[in-house]
Image (tube, rainbow, N blue to C red; front, side, top):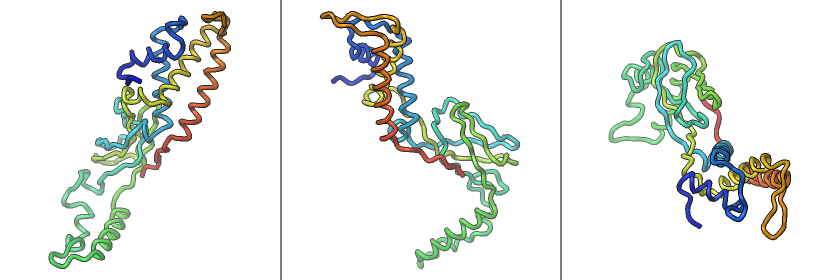
Length: 239
């Protein structure tokens, strides 16, 4: 089977699966595009293993601002927030509480490095960060594509977000679940259009709108069940 590389080829695949050119498919280009878009949306929503991938996004927090737009970044969810706060507002500044309190000698003793030194230093660093840095929680709203930061920052800070980013739609066109979802969506649209009509098939058979709609719903339920069963759930906690 040839690989689908464009939305035009995907639309033709759907029409062929529905019986074209033997049967006239009463669907416009806009209907087919809608079916594809909704299929990709469903797939990226429920399958984070293939529909999304982990990435990092750098942004700036501003004093007095708690809501930030991530529009246009194709973000599915925010997993973690990595930032350096503690009076400086900049990452890796020399005079942060961590650098002032944690001696470099706690990490490495030249010529006499001990693994225990490293673990003790990491424990000490974790305690210092807990007591001397501000802990923020970010809540991402996928609908509005906004990130709300609590508490509201009191100074500007650099932040790195660990995110799930949507896989490009064109890279999903050959996924079998996406193809079946798009087919089911197209059948549902076609079934609704022909709800009061009956199609005469070559050879004398008939196919009615309600029949097409029922088949589409059955296919949709099967594919969505497989999608939710195979999908890799994301991590939603962000500290």
